[in-house]
Length: 220
Image (cartoon, rainbow, N blue to C red; front, side):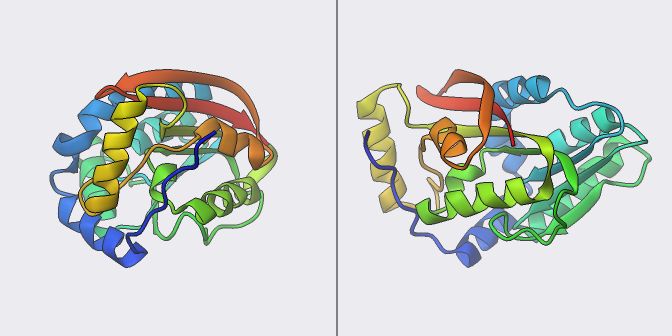
């Protein structure tokens, strides 16, 4: 199996980039990501009263859906590296509902400022593949740490499993050359979950721009 590409962009550069993109991100990327995200959300099947964490909540569209599923007895927490994204998430929440927005936390997904066993569900879409290769395991270890023993994790990620090898090669070329524009790269998401000790119970592959996207649900 081929190795995944490394990430050269720093966290500081990533934060600045997403701060700049925050106002247009809904139109720039989220419309293309909707189908695999919805598949993962449906498979996670968040129940009333559950505590849910979204890592990389971006503009908050999925976070609002998670809070609605958890209901007034549950809680959704959104975490993102970008203050600009969190500001947009807060505004979008206020437009959609008169209720107070979910708790929003500005932090790094590889070092969560959250307590052990504090969530029933963790969800993260198009975020895991933004982390450099050595940090993927740290990210997933943090997910395990904050999940209850029977907790579940939903992941959506660009995938290097299957699809056109030539297209992946070209995509990786542009990622290496223009990391500020093509900021993510395909990874082996399901394999990473299993290596981290998660038990994958559901997965689907979806095509996006001719690339493969993996959506998966796994249990601790």
